[in-house]
Image 1 (cartoon, one colour):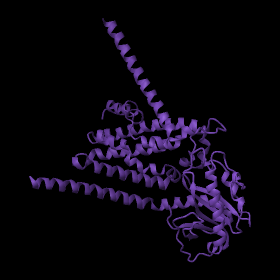
Image 2: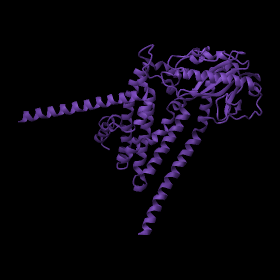
Image 3: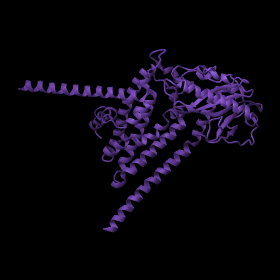
Image 4: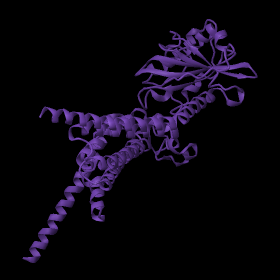
Length: 228
Length: 219
């Protein structure tokens, strides 16, 4: 794998084909879990882990799986990985497991995981596939983090609340209370808040992409005039 | 032609079977590896919750193992068997923590843990799980507000059942404007739990039948 390839894969996953704001796949967890940064990032990272391992595992066996049986086999592998991660979280970060609860098994049905395997890992070598899963997952995690941050800030006036569920009670000091004595803004915490915030994020991404395209065009036309 | 099709189908089936076997093996191994830790963290979680209500220094038995099954009861709001955890010091009963359900929350059932001291006063109440509106009805959760500590030390008083209501209905318990259904459900459930305790005190505090009382798996 050349470094250019790797760069392209990460550029695709993190920005150009971002699952959260461009492909708009796997919205179920985005809407449900992004009510705080810690929840959002935790589920994002769990999804990333599943995507990276699933892509890297499925890629080397892609020729051994008959075409007509590929979907059940892929889903089976994803489900096994998700369950393993669920067991591990239940054992080692129990409080977080209680919070993410049903959303962990739901990673299996998150269409982004299967979509990347169908579109990428079932056609590409293992290293590239693993990198693609990782990049796509990190792109999703980034969007989830921003969403969670905005919703938590407007909903509760804090950031990183609940971090003690991941790192133990001593991490409670990391919680940032941005607006003390905040009474909460219900809309931001409820699912509609997730829709609205996600809409704004998509608008922002589109604006930046359009501006970049316009800039490139202007530059091109100036070079054309210059040569002419 | 027919034979090749059958062969292809068989090949596909064997392939899926193969992956299923590998998957099952991986799952089984992970389960065996994590089983003990999961049981331990679930017990710790329970113990942590109980010891918020019954201070850990006030009892010396293994409270998570010293349980008695609660049969489904209208007063407990349960439709399936729950558990009561008994705290003892030197064999004498200190308190009992019961799994209670408030079935009529604003968005469905609210699972509670109600701890009652041996003298019949409440050691405290905690919400275990609920689906109340975030930011509105969720003040019953200790993580959001200390409303639930208003139960500490309260007891049944003869002929004063009207006290066991929120203030809006003429009782003694606070509520927050805009969310009265939630505290109503909790107050009612705790009241019922106290009544249940009054009726079944003997059975609840009775010594464990066998020392091997294994904690039942509950969800």
